[in-house]
Image 1 (spheres, rainbow, N blue to C red):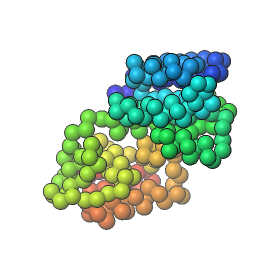
Image 2 (spheres, one colour):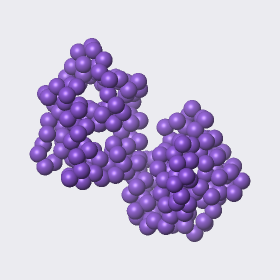
Image 3 (cartoon, one colour):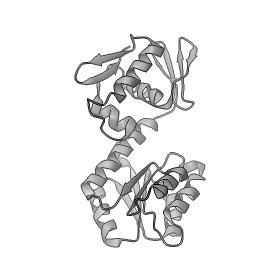
Image 4 (cartoon, rainbow, N blue to C red):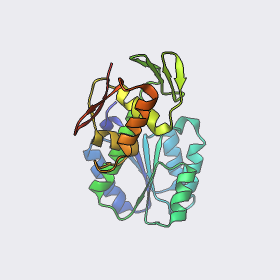
Length: 227
């Protein structure tokens, strides 16, 4: 699966803005649906099963929170990305959106090219974590993405979510060097700069639990999983 094969649904009442975003997404190769009506949008989601939904908070009939809550009740949509795109910037609105199941919250106005970049970063993570969920065996490690479990030589190792996601990402292509930029965008959804030690701390904790032989540092570039 590549990004250009994915489907996006845009839900907003601003027709001119929708047209601009739709054109930009189609130029990137996405399949795009558009709706200006909340109830129609919900029916579209259930028919088309888009990979990502971009929704305004301030919709008539059902607002964005209600739409998000209803869609999150559908088991078939559990992996669908839901991103709020709205002028509402209050903290309580953002908290409500994330509590309802949002994956991101983008405040208008934002330049179209920046918006598309944010969506593409989210979709890269979507691709990584929606690969076939069978167990992966790598150098004595068993990585079970479906159950978020790691086994080393048959013994279960408990990892926090980000550490699991980091190890799981490295395991998708053993010996491939993942750059810090790739890791930060795929795991955190934004670029973590070199002076920020977040990635290094997670790598150190993984080494403490797995041993030093598994993860190799490529100085100034990134990390790889050794087999």
